[in-house]
Length: 180
Image 1: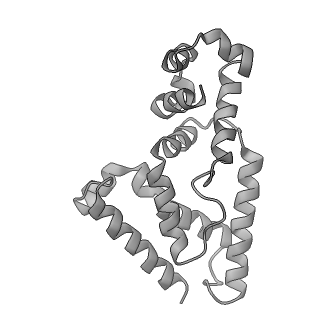
Image 2: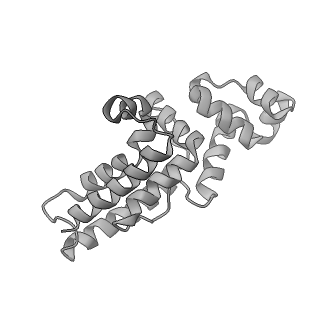
């Protein structure tokens, strides 16, 4: 049921997803969704929670350590495109607070790591830690969220091996430059 719901939410977003379509994908009666999850919102929360419980959670745990952390985030997002699409739909729709507390904890941990790295001289201290975190996360997942931009800028398919190899290498070099 959760996999069928993830597929529907990834394809159509929360607003466009239909309980009937989710039930059809799962081969179940739609009343089961209401009975077990209390409706579409409860099912969405269950999908979000189940994804946070998987290894990698929201694209990665605390693995932001540089230089390999950016490539690791890119790899996680690349290996789970449906999850990335659900997060993009969420951003586009401005919807859901499902899992926000867990996200806040994860982001607070990552932010603390950046602040410690800045204090230790391993990252530029003159950059706002929160904005630096957003920049790093964005660098890691942007090509997956806007694949057409990848093609227009590089001439490569974002799902292709050549682009993925080159982008992983680029992220590693970017992280090294930041750490100087």
